[in-house]
Image (tube, rainbow, N blue to C red):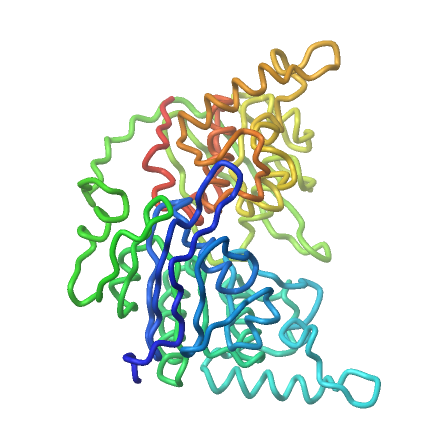
Length: 446
């Protein structure tokens, strides 16, 4: 590939939001046939820069050149027209639709006035085989794994003719096997003439797949260099601006008495099929219990049953000896069980609420946040400011809408809220999704 040819050039891009400069005079280049990584902490400005390239935001200053020609990208349709596709961290799929229906949505081939579904299916199947994606065109999104859903997102960009692909945190919720498969897909895409921008926090993956890397810190470009001339330690130090240790010293666990006791739990999933079949386990005070498994093997149903979001068919759940099977979510929360959900947008935040309001979603009715049915905004504001400071949630103000925060800072806000409740048991589903060091600042004792 001719990596000397520049396919994307972003010159001196500046983007401001109320109270913050997300991109400060940022310049960036992507070569033909190159995989270029964008590296930075949460809120560094990586996704904002790529959202500008994809037309979701407009820059306040600077210019963009595509294949050497100045381009005004005033929306995603213009970006697609220019051959730019984006695979978002949060997939944009219609779950009841088939793979084919999702891929061609909005650009369906027609036969008269009707959709030519057979032709669409053939096109999807051809693309899937060409790029080694191996997706079933007739499966519904509900039926396939997260890794396969991501492949559908990739196929959506390829179906629309993208030669420049942006991957935003693509491995955040993939299994190790799926990550290896995705890296192989990226190599295949590049071998067939595509160019890739990879937004990621994972140094190991950058070293394995990228040709070059640009490091952004607090909205500014710190450095841009070839991967062959660097190492993970150097990249980590450039990313955070200080010396770092890549080793973790872990204290020996000291377990206490049983705090959560689950016995013979039966929970039904879709169509009345058992998702959990007489599942039993215990969690002791002071220990971390890991639950591993391929996506779709009952993990989501277990979380929903434990938190009161799904009925329990049979079996028992006890927290500190208190029976909770079938209890309401509020009662379970008040009993001392907290949840960091897998999908922060669906189940963790109200995106149109301010940060301060999201910090009291489960406690707004309690003192000091409410009295005689009226909210005490002074107490709510002080609470939010304290959590933002303690957990380093990077937000312009406590009045900023949650949707305006970066993915990692949205996750920090959720973790801050749940940890501050001082729960007896914390359930963490994919807690490090989109966060550089999600657990490095999270300390649990007792």
